[in-house]
Image 1 (cartoon, protein in one colour):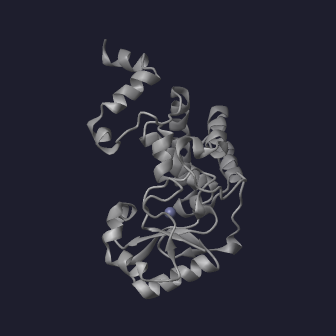
Image 2: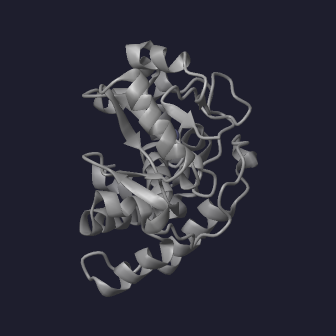
Image 3: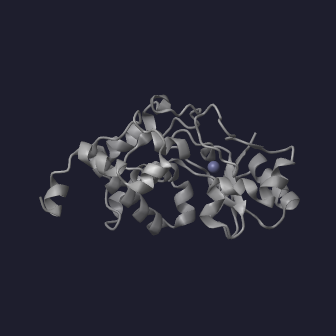
Length: 255
Ligand SMILES: [Zn+2]
């Protein structure tokens, strides 16, 4: 069978087998035999959804994408041909990712937002210069200011307020990269209705560290060590937390 023939006759099972044979993934995944996957049809829909959300992000800009509401995203899709309207299949996948109880795939965190059309008012947030991110006024902003003072200028905000569309896009992208493995995706990114970034929390990192800020390596930085000595902040996702989320030393819990 030639290569094109293989791809066109590929069903979900062979597709998954191909993935499990990848040496790169095999090293990362210990036992994925009980993991829950999207169907092949859902996975192809996810690919289109993921691309549409990326186009939307480019169109409205990184910072606006953090806070755009779902209704606004639909509006941009309908009115700007470069983005294009979200299809019926994409919308039913969004509904599933937003509404489905994630307990069945090992995520036990609390729901933080039950309204897919959640609006974030500009009056309630502040843009943090040169980060492309926002923080909620009140405790979150106060905590961040205190952190900068106590830890130093090498501490940076790496993610702040995230409305449903942003959380959905992070989740969809992770799910796409994982080959549609919902169990694995929800260990590293909260499903769209379950992120504390939508209501309070934020992430910090070490200046210039890029993606490494979102790995265990952040726990070995001086910035993190200083943070552990402060009594006004705590980590939302400690090692072996009951939510089923990986260890996230960079994620600050706002109380
Ligand atoms: Zn976070």
